[in-house]
Amino acid sequence: MIMEDQEKSKAQLLHELQTSRRQLVELESRVGRHQESMKRLSMLATFPEQNPNMVIEINQNGMVSYLNPVAQHRFPELWVRGFQHPLLTSVPSIITTLKQDGQDYIGREVDLGDAVYEQKICYLREEGLIRIFSHDITALRRAEEAVQQMAEQLRGLARRVVMAQEEERQRVSRELHDEAGQALTALKISLELILESLPPDAAEPGQNLAEAIALTHTTRQRIRLLAQGLHPPVLTTLGINLALEDLCRDFSKRTQIMIDYQGLEIPPQTDAIHLCLYRFLQEALTNVAEHAGAAQVWVNLDVRDAHVCLSVQDNGRGIDGGNAMFLAKNSGGIGLLGMRERLQLLDGRLEIDSKKGMGTRVTAHLPMGKTL
Image 1: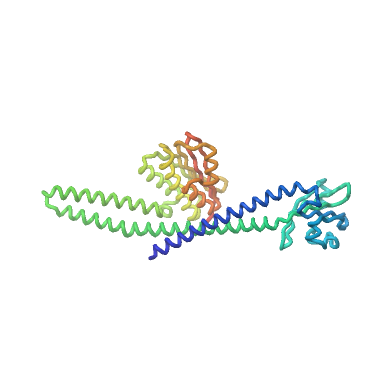
Image 2 (image 1 turned 180 degrees about the vertical axis):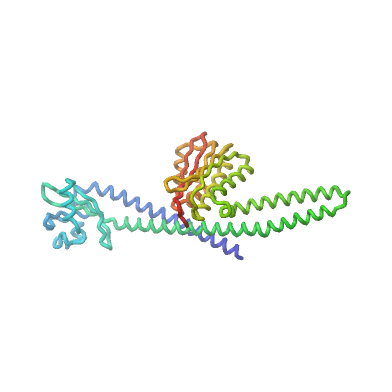
């Protein structure tokens, strides 16, 4: 029953994550359309009557001399209030700056609470006038805020998914070690006692029992390795450097791929960073075994510019540079996607460098001291 509830909880989290991703893509698309619209509108700046944005001309004394139709409709009180209007706040000091620096214009944003305007404030030196183009970017800023909020929600959901996965792995690891492991140990002992009690002339039953004992031992060892992979106790008992070296050693034994591990004794980091580095190496080595066709792997752990860096390089078939850049940006496979999302939860990043026929290097960069 508990497992069913946990599975439902994980499924719900994944569904929420996928929904949020779709919403984020739509919001980013809206932002892009707004930006394209702004580029087109800038071409109309020399035609104030036709400009769909507000165009305002005002003298240095704060007297408005011109409002295009859009400005007259939106803020008719500009005729009276001039520089006192919130839309024109601080314009006199901006003109002083333009005069001193010899600039022709300055851009800024004005937030009126219910609306946000992007302004281009121009100083017409010969006429002694100030021309202000104001573009309503409220929808754009609200969309950007929504994108930011959605990104934070995605990070929160992804964090919950990762935590749920680790809790489930820890539970399964404990059950494998405590229940299955102990049961197999008891079975092995029972079989050994039976074997010892057989008469000397029971050669065939003895051979069968010996094979059963050997199989039980092998199965117990595999379960132990599986439990360690699900929730590695070596992270707390050995530390990250020795834990990664131990992982490389076990992987090399299983796959017959040579691994050269070089790791520095880095300053103590958070459990989240240690686990992220361990999972990253697991996934990277799995990708090497499944896709690279490599005979040699080099793993390096060090510290650069206040970041913990773990790189995995192989001498396999590699991929061309364009695809490597695409994969680094988009994380093309499920494994790479998992790598990138785990790293991003800790403000880290994934780097991929590869050339076709010359192997691949994947590197995890994590700022020191981060936690979930």
